[in-house]
Image (cartoon, rainbow, N blue to C red):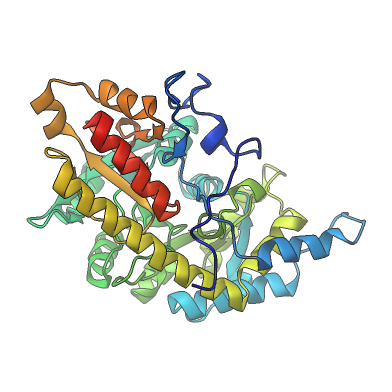
Length: 403
């Protein structure tokens, strides 16, 4: 491969909660290796990557830093052109122009801006479960009532939307805003076109605005294709607020910077008005250059290689689990780099609680994440965005000391 996805990157003391927070006892931090065990931390919890990013990003930032002024600025045309070219090339977006693109400090902030534009605290909002923990916190913190429509697993273990349940819950709760996660986090589903078409028909028939979180849209595993929600029909284009960011793709969360795509002028005006009211939703000049650096030709190549690497890690992990961890079930993800393990069978067979299982992993340095806040009753979430050698080491520890 052209880029390095095999070297072990030491992130200790480099402002990375993935490796510095475990075992500290801080809020939401998982446990760390048992003192004196000799095990190091293998970070498999928070959803960032343990690979060096594409070199064009630090190069673009470094070039800008050479100029010693960082005053007020407007986004460069190059910023918008880079997004348009990326979305057209990778996602097949059509009819996109700079006016459709708006900056967001983060995808979750964009979700709240869109909600505030078309709903009020106390209003019900439809989400699927399992549910990304960030949705839960941001919606509840802002006073919205979450109504879950559970995903169902088919005979092959593939997570599917339950369209009848969605329609029934929307009608029963008089819901007019829904949040869609595409690809889905934490289940890793890459929705097929027909699935999105059917979901959007339900939202249309119930006059629901759709907020589509597509931050994972670049991390699609081999054999699958991301379909932007806005591209499935003209009505979907009109009623959908789509949210994107280079942060998940290129590991830039610490730089802050996301963007929305909104085609409908009325929806766009209302969301932009809400986003501006905090007087804080403002772009950082270095995050702008990070995006421009990411969306270079090298970035296209780097992401393609990244998806190949992650596909290999997912294949290895799912095969290992199937052959070694009896009672643990996992639906093989089609996108993202997260696994969502159902450990209920193993826990029941061995008389263990999920807390005991989580702790056993932490004790040997496998820092995985409690899946219950994601609405998995006996689930563990695992990040596979590490060099394969570290993934192999983690699963070897789990086999020898945990399962």
